Amino acid sequence: MSSSVIERAVPEKRVLTTKPRPSDVAFRATLNVMSYSSLLILAAIGGFLAFRGFGAFKENGFGFITHSDWSSIVDNSGKEVNTFGMAAMITGTLIISTIALVIGVPISVLTALFLTFYAPEKIKRALVTVVDLMASFPSILYGLWGFIVLSPMATYWAKLIYKYLHWIPFLNVPSPAFERSPFLAGIVLSIMIIPIVTSVSREIFGQTPLDRIQAAYALGATRWGMIRAVVLPFGASGVVGGAMLGLGRALGETVAVYSVLNIVFKINWHILYGYGGNIASMIVQKFGEASFTEKKALLAAGFVLFVMTLLVNMVANTVVQRAVKSGK
Amino acid sequence: MSTDNSSQPNSLAGVAAARHREPGSAPLGSGLEARGVHAWFGSHHALEGVSLDFAAGTVTALIGPSGCGKSTFIRTLNRMHEFIPSAAMAGEVLLDGKDIYAPGTDVTKIRLQIGMVFQKPNPFPSMTIGENVLAGLKLAQIKSDRNKDELLEECLTRAGLWQEVKDRLGAHAGGLSGGQQQRLCIARSLAVNPKVLLMDEPCSALDPGSTLRIEDTISQLSKTMTIVIVTHNMQQAARVSDYTAFFLADGGPGQMVEVGPTNEMFSRPKDERTENYVSGRFG
Ligand SMILES: Nc1ncnc2c1ncn2[C@@H]1O[C@H](COP(=O)(O)OP(=O)(O)O)[C@@H](O)[C@H]1O
Ligand SMILES: [Mg+2]
Image 1 (cartoon, each protein chain N blue to C red):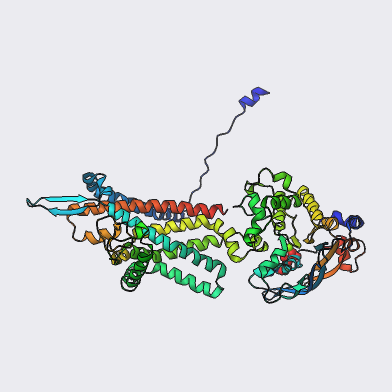
Image 2: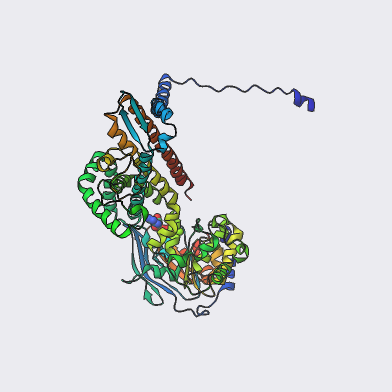
């Protein structure tokens, strides 16, 4: 018996094929090109920035991200002397983005909670439209509004904050100059990130399982009690993800920040004080009149911003996706 | 409906007769009373004129084919009905003689007195077993002067779960079996010390073993509180309830056809439709 088992012929596995129609082939190829092209463009931009900026990285070494001097001067002998350090711009960017998150995220979460659990249907629809519209507004309008309308108010608030909270180190100022501060830029940015953070939060809050909501209510919970016990634990990771998407936007925002911030190459931890740093705005400010070498340094700066934004967005996407999937 | 009921309707009555207690054997206040309750979902009239008394300390089973308004009715009893956006109601529900729909009533206070257990076990997954049991106190912001550990043990014991979880109160509730989760949900509703417990098909998502354990729990609880249970299992109705109310939607809105002591409902119902239903001829 066993010999017959050994001798049993095992047929060769067949290759399963089909002859696709030409139209199908063409369609699939188009889709492939489309979907890979965005990846390709991204890689191309990153590659271009890294390649062109390479010189600046090489000349300045680590100093490029740890120093704050940025100068390109021609000395007496006609030679160009360059120092490029981005420390003030990097810290400035992070500070302003943090301010934007600290102000923007709570407003967004409360707005999302209001839209999901409190607003009557009509108001809800109107507000959602408005918030979505906010997202599509050109940044220059935020910039102009920030400069003309918000600036005087923010200066007033800054003075108030200073008056009562100046004992907190970063809320102190060396001299009473409150205009064009990181604080103002942060407020403008916070308004710009509210739409994205709100809509991600709303999405996730809306997915809170109904049986848990009912369980809370059946235990005599108030609406706020229910939100704290059920909605916030459920939505927390989604909110974090939304905030990081907002951070991704805040890091790269250019025109709006450029309109309201006094850009100076010196690290400023006093957020109410009238100068700060921002990579994107700095590039815009310098690029027009930059020498060939300085242009390279600006491209290198662009690369730093590119990497920062990419990292934040990647983490954000993972967090949001996990939040949506786990549905815990 | 399970078919083995139909062959022996009398045994159901027998079970019910053995179980039957006279109302008032547990003097616990004046109970719950529905008077002419109607319910709508938008323009859909789902429930028509249900009047039903739940004497304190009794167990009442609500039976009837699916879609006849049992869930809708039970949800009007603790004002959970109004969570559905288009929902409306008419009539009165009296708790200890006071209308729970009266203007100026704090709904959250009503739900503290009338607890509810749902069809699908729904513990809070982000909380531990212990936190789940005490969640009601926190949610309703009740300052209980009782010792938390004592309360925890008491609620879990009454829900018949203490022995199984006493060593892992800090574990997350998601790790429990379906039946354990349901008993946890019962324990959770007991912690705020309600007078009435509403249960909407609490066993329909559970295996037979877990079902029997929950029925035990219900029998124990009925000594100290009023219980209303929706069930599509008539043997369960016979096993756990003192009274049974039969609901039916005959094309129109759901109505209560008949209510009576459970043994009578299963042995000699007054209405022919009840007879047909309990003998398994339809439904
Ligand atoms: N959320 C709802 N929206 C609209 N109609 C509903 C809703 N819930 C129940 N109904 C309707 O109300 C009637 C009674 O339903 P229900 O009370 O759930 O019945 P049962 O619990 O007896 O099976 C049914 O006709 C059902 O379609
Ligand atoms: Mg039902």
